[in-house]
Image 1: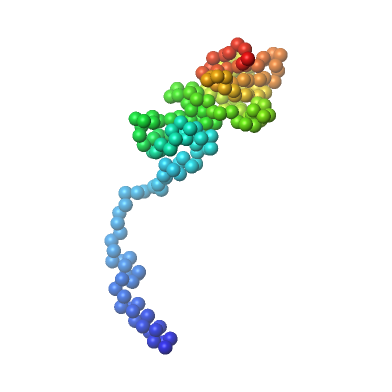
Image 2 (image 1 turned 180 degrees about the vertical axis):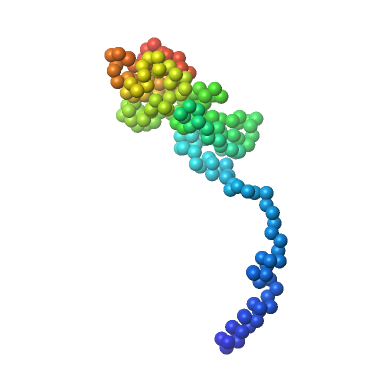
Length: 190
């Protein structure tokens, strides 16, 4: 009985007009316009740092994203998020820390403070000189060399984001309070 079935299968395979080997030779290969791997907007959004994702969600909810472009502004990574409906949601620029930026790369909406920064002080926040917005970094130079920076704290004073820069030699270089637009503030927040 086994021989009968094996013979029948072999005979069917021999006379099969649509065998896989014949099919490849008989069907023409369709040309495709696609030459590069496709990346979906969802995959692009998913690869963004969590702080950037949170900022986009907070500002636009679940708006359809068309594209995400990563660029460098100075030493900072900036993400330009383009939406499917640019009339309703114009392109959004977001710094790696989650700060929403204006077109001139000044901070429009500061990133929320990290909970560890609130609990443990500026050093736990992890801000480095390279993390400063360009207008703030440009202000620090005349006050003290960037190598003299001991710590950087970011605080929201009302609706204003302020960077508090402490230096290693506090006598020679007193603490500096700088608004995100580069204005030097005279005193600390009261």
